[in-house]
Length: 401
Image (cartoon, rainbow, N blue to C red; front, side, top):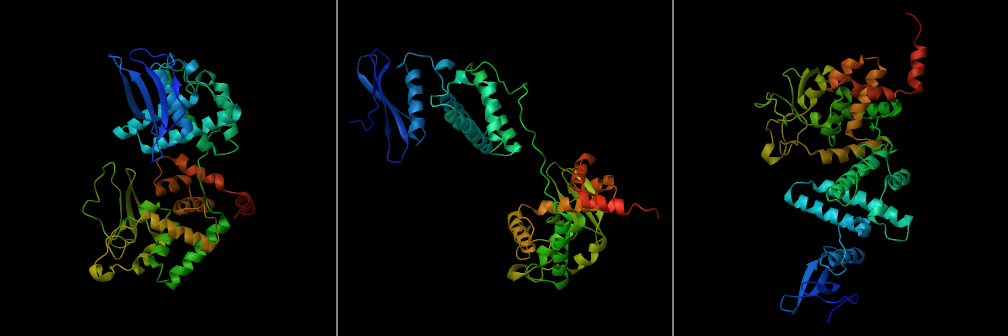
């Protein structure tokens, strides 16, 4: 007795299925089962997993298998009979195989799912009928992009367009579609802006005064963290550079491999040597010498008590690097306590340092070299964050000496 009533019956011929149906297993997955005649004329059954718990998706897969195995007598590789939903299922199954072989990132596959499902949802709202592959065109896709502008950021739209372009290229390769209308075509899509979150002048000063007060009062609970923040605010370091600072040069801190990065103080604590992203730079620590001298250099706990710490901001109980995730949580708590937006991150301090140096009149080329930027154009992005208040100061200070 079959648990599903959706049974298709056709005139049977040797080697062709004449009955198919869907059924749902106890684990919630749908399966496609079909009956056919073997070469001796005996009825046989075969079963295939639909790899889904969604009944609507399973029905589309049933329709696809029916055509492949000859029930409907149509060619599944003809776009007139191929729906957008069916082609999406086939494409995602193809991409899933690539993930299993290690040829595709799971994150990329996840992006494919999100992007294509966004377009499918749009087609369902557009029309009550099934959106066929032959209906797909650049004009419709442009309307989809325009609709998405009200829902997501330009960066998200650009990412979805890239995923959709890969899907179109796969269709063209399989002779299911005529051309990839994304490649070489002028779609009216918004250009994503490079997001640079920079604290305002008031926010920067509030944070500066708050951390400085903590440093001077030697808050025992957050001693290492506030010193870390203070170093970032004074030197504009990346968080990855700051947490790697060592008290002395390590035995391997001289190689220049692709994945190598290191940062260490000189003996006098007056200079930092940084190798990051295959670029080597040396920067002075300025007034931070006394700050470094106040940081404890010995470990804590039974195992590392009185042991020499390798990293300036390392975990004093394990003598290892601190995890960036825990540091990020500490930053969120700090921003909340100071009363500045939670969207800021540890990297916002690096941006804030650069904008503050521009306000002080430091040459932008020197700022670029100090920060370790590959090109000065990256540093110039920070100049866009100067506001009317900064320009008023320029006009006010325009008197000749």
